[in-house]
Length: 372
Image: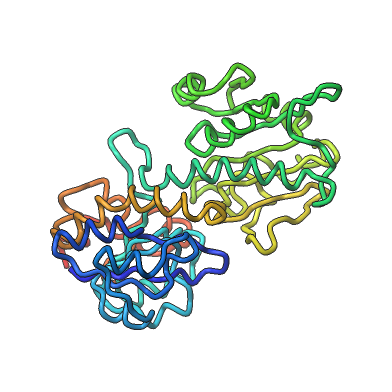
């Protein structure tokens, strides 16, 4: 199969889907890999390294035109719409529920689109999302540390245990991968950390990985209100159900927060768990609602692009290899977890959550493949 690895178009996106070692693994199996010139530079990988791995360096147009499978990181930008063709396989983080225009255009184009973020496993976890979630959680705390500085618009509180000053309090919503990532750093800086979740097993699992200055409480209204009143930073790390219209934290709840407190929304679901959150960029990362600073950058891992590219490429390679070796249909039918990530199939929308959110027609993935 011919595989294409483009340079990402999204502003401030420095990750690359396949690092040279992954390209080498694909070419050794007999696949041809086209890599766009300078695709890896943002992550510290030179064109020379890709050539040594067996890649063919090409222009963006050549990569898109020649490949059977487009191997990407981020959602499809408008400038890419016309470069795709019917039946072309695209694997990436689509986030189709948040990008209606892209979704409509992908349906019109008729691609086979597989979303990393929806591929699951036997443990009901998301193996292609969790590596980036850990980085996002850690990056979320680093951002809280940065923007709490007075020179960056914050209150001037160092989020660390400093002799002579009260220890800051950090509340983290969600004990998943991003929550644990945020808690590891927040706790190591000596903060008083509270983690909230509705899943006892998730809290128990996190407890064994984290130090004693982290407490775990059920995510209910009473505990959430306490955190709102006492926390210097609230870090949201839960993905909100795409079909829900309610929230955990409402606009009026911000009035309970301390002056100078901040919200870090790692999940970046617009008007999701936190009503006042909307996606921002590294260029313009923060805004204020009801006097509370919000940080909602939707690609935090790009700030740590080399690390992110290495672990993302390692996580996605087995799935890309299976598609390249077997073809899309066989790989999808052989692996129900991979099939869970199928979002677009020859003009059919095969991700139920996006269909429900945008009132679009949904087709079961297996039915779509079998009836094609």
